[in-house]
Image 1: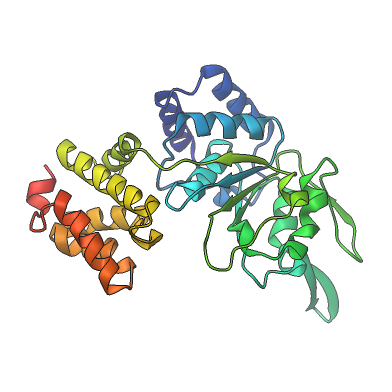
Image 2 (image 1 turned 135 degrees about the horizontal axis):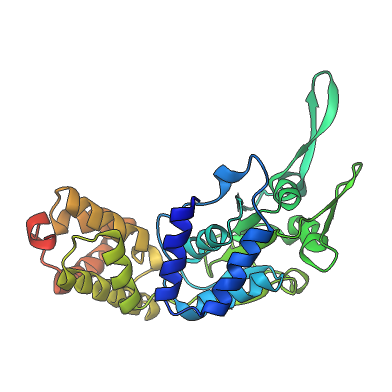
Length: 311
């Protein structure tokens, strides 16, 4: 991220109400830990901002205190957006490590490979991130098997080391942090064991409020009229309530889908067409699709177009 992008992000955090003393410590961290040569292109340039003052305060403080953090909460709360924003504001190269059922230790820390006629060690994303002082984003950490994640225990606790069998120990750079993200109830997820969870501080990420969603929509779509930003924010809040009450599944509760739909309206589709593509069609049950359509029709005119929404 360039200096202009950093200033913009810091200004955003000031607008969110983050105290100056905390932001001063963030800037001091950046100056003390510039990104390693060759990793500058890994420093994220976030497409979206995370809105939520209290979560920002907790996450910034935890990282400054040397902690790894685990972001938990329901779908569409912005956990990955926050993780990317954190790497950006601290100026750290980020490694996005997507975890899944068949992830094993070798996929995380590396394995032997054959190069130039001899067997050599090829670093995995976790060891490279550790050595170069990056932020390792462990996406959907509760998808991987606990026995695979056990290889991270020494890296995540006070030892801050990765012992690669047959090779040297890798000491974590002082700026290295790991950020885990997890949703509840997805197919293929499992309980994290206590030994792993104890190595993180856990931040419960709440559902985005209508007020914060309205801010996000105005930030991403400056030409979107104030009244329509409010309507879309209230629509999403209605979907959250329906999902919480088990009237619909979480498939239709898709913030990315809502943002995509508004982008499609700006591109020329009607509201009905765009919301069908971005939200309604995310669920494959015919009855549920009708329920979602009913929620949308009660809030949003189906024939409104770009001229009506943007000005």
